[in-house]
Length: 480
Ligand code: NAD
Image (cartoon, rainbow, N blue to C red; front, side, top):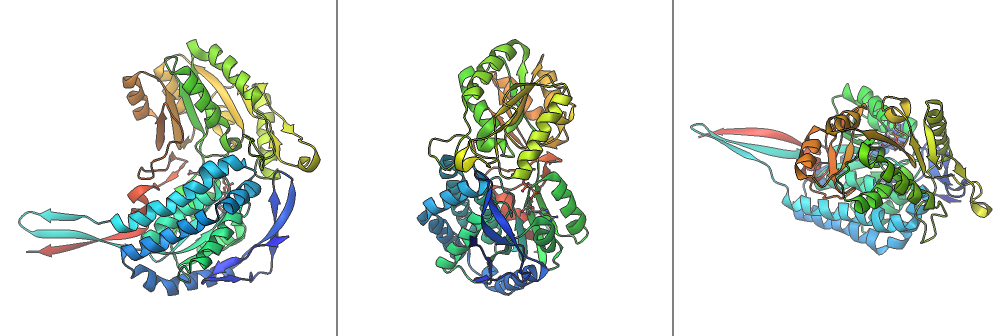
């Protein structure tokens, strides 16, 4: 059993609490390692180390931070296969997905924000007849980065990289369900002689380690990605301490398909946007809305393709769908499928756990599932399931499509399929979401704002938005 350690002040440290929790391989349903369940002493040690490192790190020139961040990107790249295998094993995701998306995007995050350290600049405002105002942007100090299990290293690095680029020191907590690539990142930090205390990685459960980090008075800002309920808890604790908060939360994204779309392109992308990473991407389109005249053609073609999608061993190169992340999460998804039936839905394909036998007999596998016949206001269509489950529903016209798309408390992402340019712009403007993809899905340009509205979050990540979050502006007014 491999026991991972906290990385504090540039060293691998034993956990103060002495407590460990199992790290489970979801495709086998068995523990294969242990992770520390850190307590507030571990967190305090990490925050103190980060405080000590702050004057040095914040005093560096942009080009010096640029080199340090690039060294992390290069260190991951050198151990690419190890990172890819670890991500797939920890999360249950197909190894091909970890190789094509998760790890390369984590590397890009460090490269992108390395260059932001060079390019970030602040504003000045000339006030006629008076003088000049200029804005100083200073790093905040010690910041917390807390990330979820679905895209483990990708989302972890998406927070850490801008926080460091802007001159902050970091205490980061990955999800306790998928800690392995965060641990490998701490090994990389050690290998490349990343300055001690600048990046501290502390492992443990949300209710203990996460909560201690959020409450710690030395932490000036919290960048969090995870569920909406956890986000609310963090606001309750950290809001009263006036900590800066960036919250990327859950979603229930609509995928709106008009009859005039490019059918083949829409169909192949909709299969991905429904079931990539077993539907466990916050940007997956879980409510598919189809224009009346296309409904039957879409349903037949979609269901035919979904039935051909096989769930199998995530470590095999040819696998397209692997395991869901944990037993608890699998049970939650299966409960939602049951709920959908009770709410009057028809399961038109999938709907069950899959037993792959042999070594994978206890793995957490679920068939890709398509449900129809549900009202948009029922719980199945209102609550985040976050698994390989989509509902299909019809709409008569553009107005009804928009009404149904906006009929949930969430507003993270959305997808629109139409060849009508004017309609694409109109619908994009009317959808209550932070991200609209037209005739595509999951295309990312790291310069663009990323985040949600309504219960999907507060603030934006990406590009200079993240650099602004991780700095405090101060206006200096100089009279002629
Ligand atoms: P989660 O909220 O359970 O956990 C996320 C992180 O928060 C973990 O590291 C966890 O240990 C920690 N945590 C839990 N309770 C805490 C507390 N009280 N104080 C501090 N930290 C705490 O979410 P999850 O199950 O890991 O991830 C799935 C959720 O994340 C889904 O809702 C999904 O939509 C969302 N998500 C959102 C985005 C986005 O960009 N908006 C991206 C990915 C995932």
